[in-house]
Image (cartoon, rainbow, N blue to C red):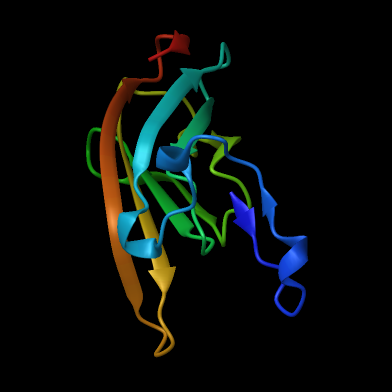
Length: 133
């Protein structure tokens, strides 16, 4: 990761030794991995994001729907600061009813206010089965 200090070019800091893992423009930013961990209470799910290192901070929207297609959780990360982070979502249903479908959308907001979607991923998980999925 290179931080451009603007007027002071001598203040460029290189955080990534591997040029392949260097900062990428928005068109090349992708989900590398999305991990899921269902807590014992079956109402919380930890999400672990691994995103391509980025030069512009992307936003992420996560939508979780139950088996009937009803929204059970919705989360928006506005301009992620780091390419790797964890966050916990809470399922709205009183009692978990098995399989849920999750969609994560990686996007940027353009100057005109529209979304530029650069990647998305889908996963299913069983909320009645605590642990990593």
